[in-house]
Structures are given as C-alpha cells and as structure tokens.
Image 1 (cartoon, rainbow, N blue to C red):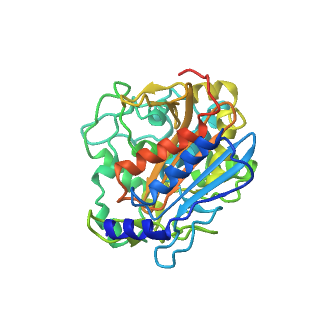
Image 2 (image 1 turned 90 degrees about the vertical axis):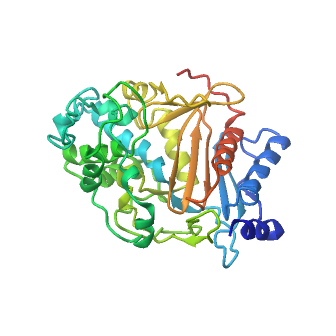
Image 3 (image 1 turned 60 degrees about the horizontal axis):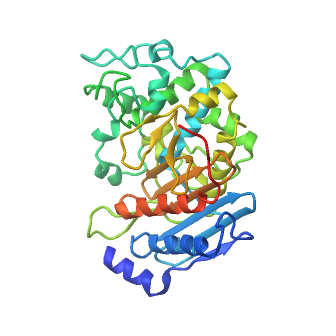
Length: 381
C-alpha cells in the first residue's frame, strides 16, 4: 500500500548517492541540495520506489539516485540504469522523419495519404488532408488509441503482442477531435502512423532506422528498441505499477511494449537520453532547415507555457529562457528529460507508473528545471 511503502522508505530505505565528478550543473551548494531534496521527495512523500537523475554539462556527468531498485531486496538504483522511456520515444521517431525530409524522401506538408494510401481513412471520416507535419505536432485531430484500450486487459496479459495497424484502426473507428490543423491535442496514434510511414518510405522497420540513423552514429550502447521483447537488457530497476489507490505495488518489469510501438516502446538510460537530446538540439542529427522545423512550436494551452514542435516540446525555465525535451510514461516507469541549446541535458526517472501522483510528475519536471537552470537558453519559440 502507498502508506506502508512511504513509511518504509522514510524509515531508512531511501539512499541518495552523488557520483561522477563535481556537482555538474548544480551551480552551488544550495542548488545541489535542492536536487538531492527533490530526488528524496520522489521516493518518500511522492511514493516512488526509486529515482535517478542524470545530468550532463560542461563539467561532466553527475548521477543522483534515491530509493530502491527492488522493493523486496532493497537494492539501490544502479547509477547506469536502463529503463523504459515511454513517449520520450517520439523525438527519435520525429528525428528519423525529419532526416527523410532532408533527403527529399518525405515532405512535411504532404498528406499522409501519399505515403500510406487508404490507411488514415475511417468510416464516415475523410482524413486525407492530414499532413506529416500534423502527425508530428499533434494537430491532426486523430483520436488517441489509448482512450480505447483497457489498461486492466493489458495487466491481465502483459506479454501479449499488439499489432500497430490494429491499434491505428481502433482509433480511426472514432470521430476526429477536430479538423486537421484546427487545434492541438496529444494523440499517440499520430506516432503509430509516423512509424508506419517510416517503414513504407524506407522499406525497413522504424526500429531499424532508429538504430541506423541515431543509436549507432551516437554510440548509444544503452539504448534499444525491443519489439516484442519483454526484458530490459543491462542493469535496471524493477518497474512497478499500482493498479488502484490502495492496491499494493505490482512488478511489471517484464512487459511487451508492442502496445506502445513507435509512440513509446524504447529503452534507454539517463546518459544515453541526455546524449541524444544534446546531439539533437545542437544540430548533430538534423540539417539546419529541418532543425528549424523541429523547433517551430505551437502553444498547447498548458498553464506552464509548454509549446510543442515536431516531436519535441519547449518549456520556460524559471531562471529565464527555454529548455527542450519530452516526458514519457509506460507501465513501470516515468521519465522526464530536457536540454538547453547551451549544452546541458538532464533526465529523471522514477520506477513507478501508473500509480504515481501528480506531485511525482511535477517534482520530476522541477528536478530537470533545477538541474538545467544554471545554463540559460536564449532560444525563442
């Protein structure tokens, strides 16, 4: 139960570890203390079993951990942990499509119908005007398939395979949220379609293209696209779900992520996510024209000033400027990542989802912002 777990952690299970050189990016003792405080809050008051923060800046890498990787053994969170990154997968998928745009194999403002003929049409709904850009920016109006998937059914059979086309068809059987381009609403279906588009244009799976174009060139040895694989390779914390407010934690580390596919199936580490984000926002993965398109945002209507580009979102930093990143949650894990154009990147992971509170998500975002704030980004939206 939540209360019992929180009490146990507060009684001495929670452990903070700072490794990896200096307090990189922490700026001063007060900021470093704030990061420690936030990590420990995630594993006590917020109720997460374990938490990790990886920060990279000009001083080097810093790793903070708190809590446990395994609630049975009380093993600490490995500093080189791998974990499921959920919707943090979307920037990788968007990057591949933007590379294809730079190669003149895809046009951002072409209809998806050109590349996936017949796929986006639904009974009573002509979606042939939806463009590639609208998929990547969540302005297509296509309903989110996850609204029609029962999480309890997944929990009953977490190793089951889910076909991407079937999930797309499940969503497209329902009405549009709005006319394409007339609004903004986050929809995981957009990125299932983006993955299908990659496969149609290249003749390779979206996973193969991410490996060839991103993972291998950047040397992301702790990053993988598992397909139907249910295991997390390398050191990792157990992933937990809390099915109900008073329910005990359930270990869901072994899980077939095909239900997430190109919308959220990838596995990575804090170090690798930070390396990817740094390479992306600083132009190592995209040509200048495509990087500009990536960073052309539109407001999402959130009170915190969030704006969404093409698979990447921006948020204001409390110390001024912006940071770029994404969040992700999938059974067992929640991740929040961000980077500034001045060279700092930070990723926070908690091994609990669903079942975490709004406070967990908010404290994770605060931790990323606190880590990044010393390097003030001046890029405008």
